[in-house]
Image (cartoon, rainbow, N blue to C red; front, side, top):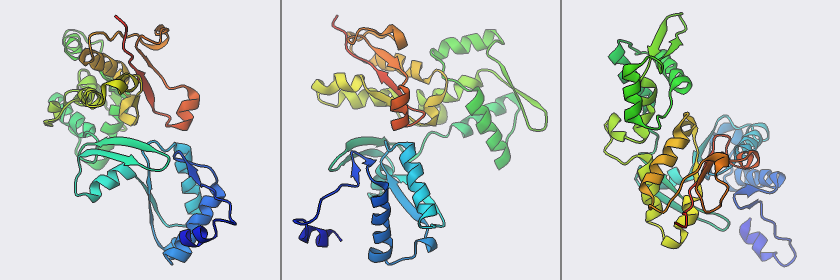
Length: 301
């Protein structure tokens, strides 16, 4: 189709279906997929599951629309959307690395560690055994996952929080199991997600997420570090732990040059001061509902 179109480009109007990773014409995308299925691949889409690769920054609304077209227009039996950066890394036989993708309208880098996230649910199960709670079945594992998502948080100062938990019951929370029994957890609430900043807790000999962010910035040209510090985007369900954003701000600030000054939220009025803020509603709709933007700008002092 491309060669035929190129041969007739003098009498045809050139139209891009996607621009800057956004689909500009969904009807044309459906036609393109129709041609790919029936003319190029010569397959019946209703008989084959589909693997669709997407960029990490593809908005959820675009993924939902693609899903709708594939299921409703082509009746595919199954669909899996994969991060194209992860797929590229896997194709090289690696599970850890930084993937740079540079195309006609989009360039981005994605760090990937072992192809997946930290096993926090398993870690929470392990530390709950210290209190005499045991979760062995798949159903019980899902209970712990729910417990993690509802009760866990990231401590701003881990050592201080451990002291508070040891001397007071104020941090304790009760989780009611489906059978009515109650589970009380205290320091487990913040010990679990602490693995993001201290991976040694789960036996990983790797850097914390804050150190990875800092090292990535420092390996870039000095002229663009200011822009990178001012555009650290937190994305993914695990960054939604209460306190994650504040802790990341604190840790990166501690590693950054001494000239850095930090203010958070509405306190940061001066563009030369640091701020950490929630992505506004419009940006959230374009990106992901669980994205937050950390802005850390160098001060003049």
